[in-house]
Length: 100
Image (cartoon, rainbow, N blue to C red; front, side):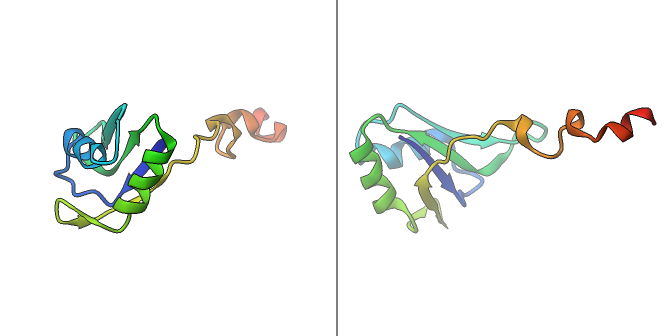
């Protein structure tokens, strides 16, 4: 199960995130998302746990608890939507704009 973790302390790294979830079972991966321009944490991350029961226990136990001084939000991650389906795709402009 892919787990979304928000409101992380900006000093929390991927190893710390992984350790917090390993208390509940095997962790395949843990990653704090970093800003490409600044190299600093964006304050959220993802944890992948292969056992759904262990993952659900981790979600239930860690949601609204403190990690590195911040109360974190933990929930099942929603699958990413196709980025081409949004209204900001230039190819989806009405034809009338193509002549300008």
